[in-house]
Length: 342
Image (cartoon, rainbow, N blue to C red; front, side, top):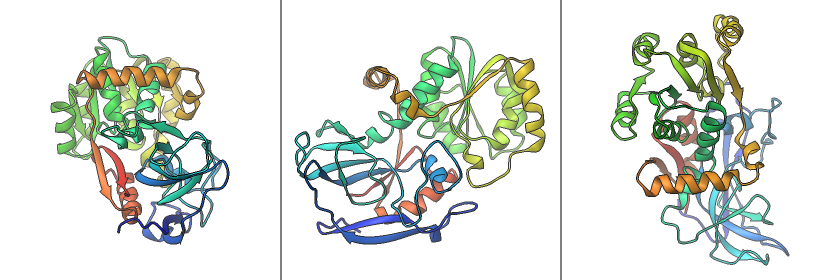
């Protein structure tokens, strides 16, 4: 369904899911395209980013960020074009990254908006490799994981928007890199294209034994994106002084209870092995002066030199965002998931 110059399509939260999101939790609406007032500009979305954190925003449980209200537009980052402006710093045709949500059009006063090179060849990369997911991988691994040459780094969701970058940075730092992914095709991609030393299909038989075989010297850094049975397999293999950047728990986002036996052994493992396990929210790192610029400069150099590869999973049409998002939570995407709206 193409965009209209007069109608704003938007997807709102119709009700709060208690488990996995379903189609009835979303609603597609049509409203008039807003008109910018003084100090505002109108954005038309080209690309929408779909990310696991959005499941948390659908809940009204206390969290680090505000939840989406019922009947409000679903939150999300977009790459958009300025189509009308009454703001002195933004002109028609400017390319902007902003959190305008799951809709065609939105007004902005510039708060939280970032100008992009309007001629950049892959604008959607501002939502992935050069945006929040890439920055998450960089900051979590290097600041908390602190990988050292010769160590073993394990990353869950290894071919996703964050995990694929974590593994490649760890490889650049001289580490042995073991990925965990869902499916043989993803595992082949991690090894043959991304350069991982090994990748294990968590859907296969005997994940704990396969992981032991792939990590004969134990695990020094585990980048946690998943939780659940994957963390259960990792925990016994963590070495003394291992570091665990805790980025996400996608296996538990839809209400699946954590393993009680695992929880009972976790404190002892953390204590006796002196493990550093630290949760982090990437928005905190944006407040660190100069850190995003440092990331962007180093990542740009790696990409230019062919040292980092990145894969996108592009879905066509705003109306298909809910189904794509539900698939994301089930691991059906292959690479960074974005919706091409324009």
